[in-house]
Image (tube, rainbow over all chains, first blue to last red; front, side, top):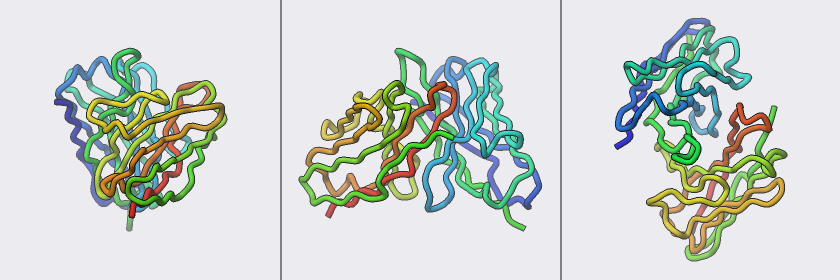
Length: 121
Length: 108
């Protein structure tokens, strides 16, 4: 069964960096694009970034551009989100989600349980 | 930046039909996806490509799309359908994804 497990969240001071990981299992990771989506507690879902199956193409929300970097290691079945220059408004639960493959599976069909990032001094 | 607009809340009695709308300028050419999120849980895909239902999702969930509006319909809503519902789509380029603000469905 498809499983996505995020890790790396925690409390970090403003201006510092944090790297999130998402370990994937139960499917051929290297065939799927992957997303990061975040949710401020009590608020709505906010798409952050997507990376293609081979890592060659990446796209970011305006809020993440220039500060966050999405990457993946297909040999380790792991997705990453490097977050730099963190701000208090980056405080959120960060989810990884599987992307879609045309004719095979819809986008954002499986999600991890999320990891909480708190940016506070 | 591209936006999807949903009503903040919808309320129905058990057994009634709940309709949640989502409007966006790119919806005539881009698919809508719908997610259910219950408190403290990760979102669950309930409708994809405007009208398709993933396996395991009850038949009372259906989707439609016309022009700049997509609609999630829950026919005969049940108490367990109480949740936040989010529409999702891409901008015209297909590269950037966006979620609607979410609709809180109350069934009581």
